[in-house]
Image 1 (cartoon, rainbow over the protein chains, first blue to last red):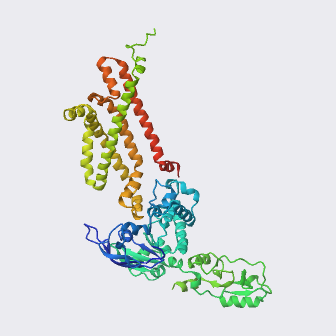
Image 2: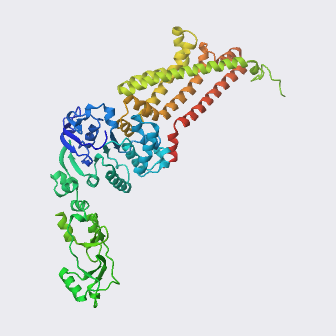
Image 3: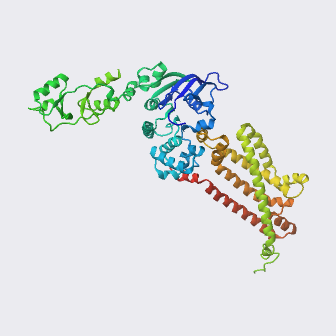
Length: 366
Length: 224
């Protein structure tokens, strides 16, 4: 298998013997090629069971899982698994093998020659941001975050189109977790894998998922949609509850500045008259004025300090300056911390594009 | 005050070089019986452990059998076997092998059980065939426990081989029996000292083996 692959679950059901309620109940789900789908829900919602049915660590009671239209049980199970990257909680690294040998596991199972494995391992160490000196060490000598990176490198070793990740970051501390999450997103921009990620952390699902799949106990599908949509329109009370407080703030983290329309802002050119500046301030109902020259915003000054013409010296810098890819959450944070109550929007070349106030932000999420 | 060293001394030094050939022969016999019983015991214990790991429910009965054999005093077991298998190597081998089973079975099973579930899951998920996982992951990670078991079993058996001389297997125990029957202390001391030395030497060999075969355990200790 190579390139990209979509995963399709059809009427997928798992019943465990001795339990009347199914663990997963007639689930229909499509994981589009090259996307991250985050399965999230309380314990007992069957999310890990679903994941393990994809690589057949668990066999479904009913239903079909197909990868690129091909049912997974058509392949010998070991071949199937060698074509699917698998990252798990607590990493599952082999403590008795060096980092290099750990990363090279699947290529070795596939019978690659030594030289090719060595080259691939070194490439992966660079990709996941580890150092080559680590290759000869054992996992026990690495920190939790480093071990998790090795786990990802090992899963990517044979360049599988699909990656299954089972609570990959639950065993590392929050700071390392946030960094590893950012690294995964960064990595995904380069490798475009089809990733199914299981988590109990709804914020992780929202941050990492192109689509978020929210499951209730018994594997019932509550909602499957892009994170912004889930936050804006929870399909049920369960989903709304599960998303928790601060849904609005969470949405702000998903929308970027280029998705909203900034205002003009009270801005004049260097050399304009003080009267002109006062008129602009009145129009905007503010006590300060922004000063611009050659499409660049130099800073701002209080209206009471105006005298004669608008100067280009003694200007105060704007505290919040944002770019098109800044999230509204970051912009809002800047706004509430600034005297002017605005965030200045610049394009990637630093040219002035407008100003965003709380009003524009709430307009954007409405 | 210094009496001349002779047959009545606690150790008659001249006796030792005179019996160099006997000592050499006894050493070979002692080693042969130790190796044979530990090796056969290991093979049987491994088969029992694999049965237990496959069918959990067999653990209690198999451990009970191994434990029962272990609890029979060695002299009694030799006594029981002689009428069936006669005097000699075979009788000693059967008895000594049965003593290794409990230690080896328990260490193999517990060693494999101690392999973290996450590691087993990861191995399965990456596409190890079951037998390959068992050998390359489960058993390999159980190596410290298995070597620990072999170490205890070997040292114990070296001691018991001394007693097995009663059924005519030779070894260092033959010197002790000889000395006891003639009220002659030199062979008793020589036989005892040599079996202790052999036990200590093997203990050291296993410590070295452990270090060589499990380099990762040091990484964990020295690591963060």
